[in-house]
Length: 247
Image (cartoon, rainbow, N blue to C red):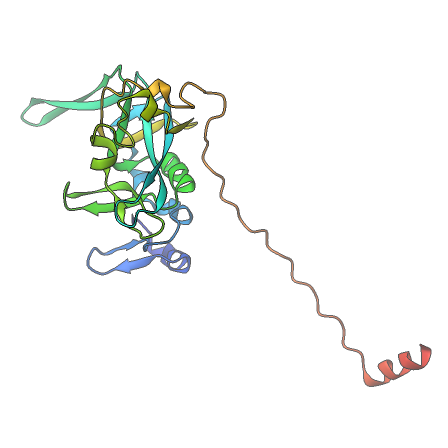
């Protein structure tokens, strides 16, 4: 994941494990590191105006799966949007004028090929699934947030998970839907990406409709500094000798 690090903060980013790419001329997070410590430098934090999907009611959904490469048991995550979510569209009203507007949809939908997430949602996602991260895909020619296998590290592509009927996030029967677990998101869901329509059995997913215990942004734990302890005073030879006689 690429970062936008001010020059004055480059030493701090380097200390946390970020690396500099001479080709792209930017700092980035190497594979295997948690994204959370670098959240202040995520490029998505300054691009919220570009996020074109929003939902007042959305869920983080987890589904047990098997890695397509190493066959290890894994858990994949996705975002379920309740009816009433909105998508920003645009049209050209003139040679140099583009007007944007929001369209509301009345279907249950899964967001996929997510190219950007709001910082709050990204922190929740990476806290719940540390291997969920951005990666470049030659197939779709862009970077998007994707699930990865914790065992072998391979990407679990969105096409198989979200676009194939019967896949983890395209259930066609209530039986398939009940394999999943949903937890409502506390923050407003905002993202840039694509979305599927017609998830008719979404209400069969356990947890959908339960708004009582929303997931919130995890608070970063900061280690409390330990006050330096003074060294004990060193006794002289004569003091130690005198204490022996007193004993």
